[in-house]
Length: 178
Image 1 (cartoon, rainbow, N blue to C red):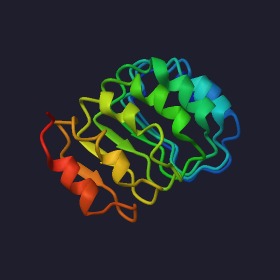
Image 2 (image 1 turned 135 degrees about the horizontal axis):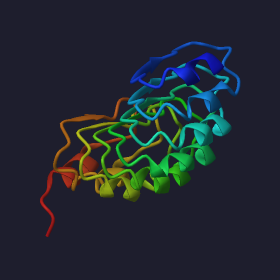
Image 3 (image 1 turned 180 degrees about the vertical axis):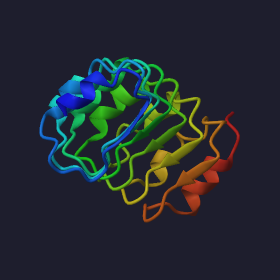
């Protein structure tokens, strides 16, 4: 990974399924032009790695699904104010990380599928006014969550696959606020 530190003009780095990284993301911290980082399906990626990349201020896309990142790792991402796309599918996070995610006002794409998230904390999603794509599939989401999503006026795609959504929740979701 140290070899990447000299690639100062690197804008995109795809290391999906590279299982031997083990702390190597620290060598990316000087890549100030990096805009897209894909480290999906790398169980070796941890919270420490998220701290190492937290200074990549031009990062627009971050894919860390199916890694060992937790709420702590997500908290390191708060400063990435250019981040448009965040994929946390299958990460070991709780609704506590939604505080950190809600600070990412530029997010247009957010994938929280398969994170075993309940309704608690869904109110934090209502602040993500630029969201166009939101996936909450395969979580413990119920009708109670939908009321917090109805203010997301830019939403173009909503994935609630295998959630516990029923007619009542959908009816409340579609009603205008009074």
